[in-house]
Each structure stands twice: as C-alpha cells, then as structure tokens.
Image 1 (spheres, rainbow, N blue to C red):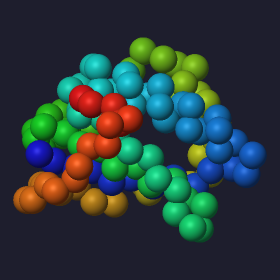
Image 2 (cartoon, rainbow, N blue to C red):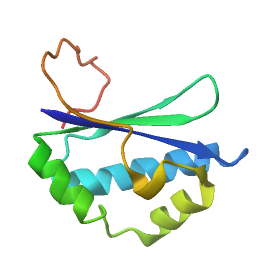
Image 3 (spheres, rainbow, N blue to C red):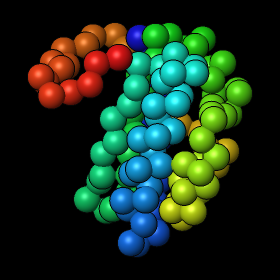
Image 4 (tube, rainbow, N blue to C red):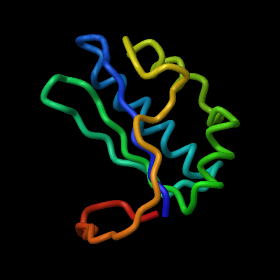
Length: 112
C-alpha cells in the first residue's frame, strides 16, 4: 500500500464548503483512479490535512500525473474557492510506502 499526505489552508467561514468539496472530489478520485479513499483531519493551527491510501505507488503516480481530474466541476470550483494556500503544484508533503499497518477500521467507517 502507498499513502500520500496533503495539506490546505482554507478561508475563514469556508470550512464546510471545503469539506463538502473534498468529500465529493475524494469519491470521484476513488471511483476513477482506484484510490482506497482518504481521511481529512484538521490541525490545531486550522490547516486541513488529507491522508490518501492507494494500492501502490504506480497507481497514485498515474492519478497524480493526470492531475486527478474528475467529473464534478462544481466541487472543484468550491474546493479552489475555499483554499488560501497549499504546497506548490499540489505536491504531497509525504508520499510513502506503508511498511506496517495496525490501523483498525471502526464499525462506522467507510470501507474501500
């Protein structure tokens, strides 16, 4: 398994808009590009951090190189409107192979 970690700073008051756009985009990316989905977190400084799981690095790389374009232009526009700052070119802050996985899926969590 492979994971990519991203972060975004969002305009104050647009947090719910960002989260909805992120969910819609993640659903599309999972369907189109074969990711295992993602988790969204919020740091104490307000920054959102997304952790996306992929079957392998090659699958992630194909999606990343394709700019993860999906069929929901409204969600993409909502996302871009909400974001103040992100790493250059949408690069992940970490892109890494999972060596050991002890994460337990809770009963209410979505499964890929």
